[in-house]
Image 1 (tube, rainbow, N blue to C red):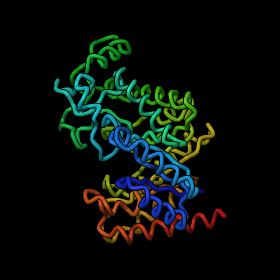
Image 2: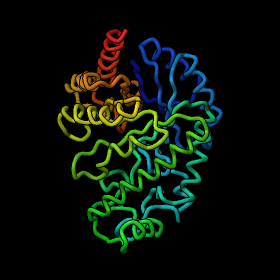
Image 3: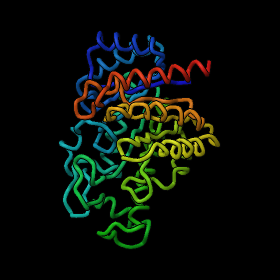
Image 4: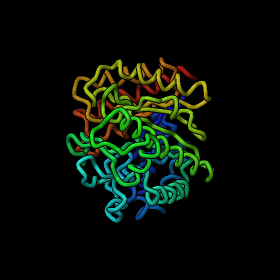
Length: 333
């Protein structure tokens, strides 16, 4: 049984050491350190020390490309986008978006540099977190617009479908965007494996017809070199019922088990309203009942330190989630 959480917002090793010792006492044995472009540029050796400290406390260490290129999830800005405006996505209104295009060769070259840097700090597993094209409702998106219609994407579309890319979001466009993300992840997974790293893929658990919906989950699980297959069914965030956790936990298990992949579910430890903390505890139980034995919380201390996503009662939420993970670890022996 693995109990994990994400860790971000602190780059002072002595304070990290205190947190890692406490997390180990609380029963955690997996930590996902966010590794943004800011970390890559300015904190590389510091992050190396932070990873070393984490491993000394018995943690398995993931590194996630937090907001890198704005193609991955995370509250971080992208220096690559600022310095490479000709590599950004083009939305359906013909204007650039504030995020890199995953089909752009220069961005892919940059991602190989990120991979080498992330493995260089000592992370064992690279955590490919919510890879996506532009989503209109997300920070930086534009209402009613989709992407990407850059020249590169238009060329790929023409090759696949035999005609010009339309401006409206047709079924072919939806299919192309999912293929593009799968092609991008296939590239990243292969580059990571070449360098001796492990791969964990966290797909967006968006339901039918919702932007970012993944249809061919099995095809993503089948990418050569995958090690961990996961998702983050944050039902509270999406204003859905807790059944969302059941549905996507089973989906992950069904896709991963035939391929011998480890399964993981992330539980929402942020933006939880007062009086609803117990539902996140139940979410842990439902993931466990579906057969998942790697359960993680986003993020450490229920994100008490980040005002934008802090729950109404972070201390209570954290204590309840930790107690539930401890209970399941005892059950597993």
